[in-house]
Amino acid sequence: MQKKISLLTICSLIAFMSFSQNETNELKTHQYGGWFCPDNLYGFPAVDILDWNSVPVINGRMPTQEEAQNGTSLIFVDSEKYPNAKPLDITMPKLAKYHNNYSKKDEIIIVIQAIRILNDSIVGFRYLNGGNGSARINDVTFLNDREIKDIAPSRFVTLNLQIEATKKEIWDVITDTEYSKTLQPIFDSSNDLREDWDLQSDVNFKYLDDDYITSAFAGELFGNQYIQRDYELGDYKYVEKFFLSEDESSNSTEFVIVCGPYRDDFEAQKFILKKWAQKVQELSEK
Image (cartoon, rainbow, N blue to C red):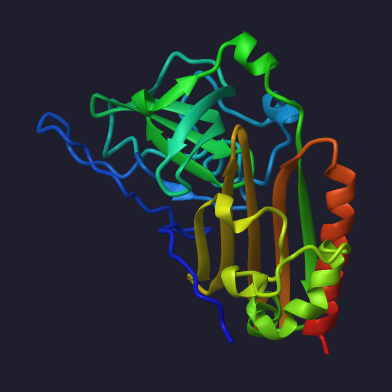
């Protein structure tokens, strides 16, 4: 039986969609503000907080189309269509806070681009947990040195498996309650979960109580399968991402997992996630 899920509007790996438009008559509509692409785990993988300042950026000029596609930058602006577009006088990368209307959390982001277009100031950024987005500059709050220093060190577990199975076969294993009792002992060795835990969850993995979920998505995105669950527990912001991309010519599927951030328990959680992922692979390849 498939579990009940709630939907979250997100964009695909390749096709960046705009979910916001200019609100004043003075500004002509452009497509650069309001992207939300948390599934772009290839172009913008997760970044541990201690490594935020080492991500690639372009400063002092507009990026080329290639740079906007290879993870160096984010937004490519057609200079013929927008001849007056220019970079803002901001040295990047910069850490900022941003209220994500889709995950319903205040998130720390890495701003990697800042441009002026049609009298509108836009920033492009990457999420620490992977993926990218954009917003108007007034929608982000840059952190000062003290605020950055106070951020607790944390790391994300990122796993990438090549599984000899279709994405549907893997999807069934990670979402169907038929497999939950087989997978449960891996992350619940003390058997503390209530008996019907799997009916309340859209994936057969359990780290935090579902009471702390702020948003959840599970479904197909432009031919790929994607699950994202966002949690908030006080000051702790946590996310789980599961991404499936199938090569139909070989009936194999790439399974990408990003979970975290974790602190002192990073190694323990990495061990659990690796065991869980390996069991999913075993069950899917049967």
